[in-house]
Amino acid sequence: MKSKKVLLTGITGFVGSHTAIQLLDKGYEVIGTLRNQQRQASIEQVIQKHTTQTDLLSFVEIDLGAPLEKWQTALQGIDYVLHIASPFPTKLPKNENDLILPAKNGTLNILKAATHNRVKRVVMTSSTGAAAYGKKKIAEFTEKDWTNIHNKKDTTPYFRSKTVAEKAAWDYVNSTANAPELVTILPGAILGPVLEKDFGNSANIVKKMLDGSMPALPKIGFEIVDVRSVADAHIKALETPQAAGNRYLCTNGFLEFKEVAQILKANYPKRKIPQKVLPNFMVRLFSNIDPETKPVLLELGTRRTVNHRKIKEELQWNPISVKQSVLDCADSLIGLAVV
Image (cartoon, rainbow, N blue to C red; front, side):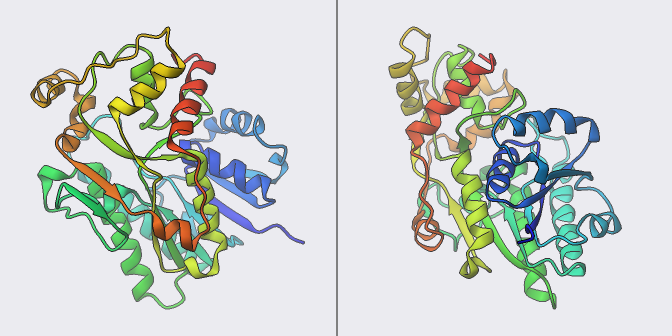
């Protein structure tokens, strides 16, 4: 049987690399996109450590800003697209359109190229940031909810970029003849094992608690999900016929920073892991010194939980526990000597 071909954007990322490993293990032929060909050898080595199927892996150098013609060439002969890549800077850009426009235009070019090449289905990584912001701060959100991008006080440029890109994708497939089927996956904060020293932003939560750079804890929390479960959700979204045309919130439980610290302290009693919770006004003051904490301010005094019944029922998704995600994330950071 001929392997199905999957183009996976953002293969060097945290979610991308884990998804590539699971796809290869299932016998898919994976073509991973790279912004820079020089990254190929290192990401190939990382993936090789976790699967024996790298003969099914190849790469194409292309980025989200590439013209449509280049995407049309890249998608020739492709059965499915997993569009995981999205610009995610650690520091906010001065002009939010530097983030929003590449996310939106890159997504639309991929969908146009997929239509041109008669790709069956595109699975796109969105974010809970496209559903749970700009409205009530203490609520349970579902797939029917969309972030209100006009409320700048309760959204970040990144969340606005994810919302704009996902809406543009749905508008395109709903109004275009012969467009591919679309499924969107909306993960929360992603933890779990990091595979290399270049890792996802969410893992910084665990890193900063382990290495002592977070002396006290802000009174905030997030919906958490394991990176391996996010990868599994993408593949289930690709394989489940009735997933077409659906959004899926992809989280497995809400953890406050305090609870993450408690899990770590119980397993690493000799490490100086913060246990003291800072008052909100102190966190606001501190954010003027450390700009990386600015996006976190949105979470002060909020509790945004999501209902994850739909993904579990419709995709038969059985995620790894949030406690295991925290511990496996910590183990991997220590194993790679990041902390």
